[in-house]
Length: 132
Image: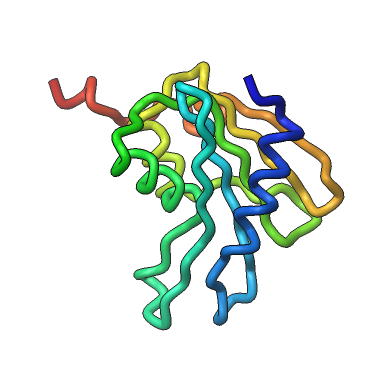
């Protein structure tokens, strides 16, 4: 399996693809699929802010639309000294496809890394099991 540092480097590469002319806040994500492929995503802003899509969801949409439905980890990096945690919408999106063994790897501007499980970032989540 790809280690956290390698996945973090891929997230930094993804950050270069950010389209963020309004906020100037670049975010990159590297999503590790169940079969070991890495899918990159970056945030894509829009003048109508509500239409902006986060890097994490960009990576998931690319992967799922290519037939990937199993994931091991995602690395997320933003332009800040603190860690750029996924927003609520991204956490809910991750909950749709990932179990508690899924790792969320966060990287700050000092290249420090923190790793979280889904349960740590989204306890008591709502998912498909509640709809059955």
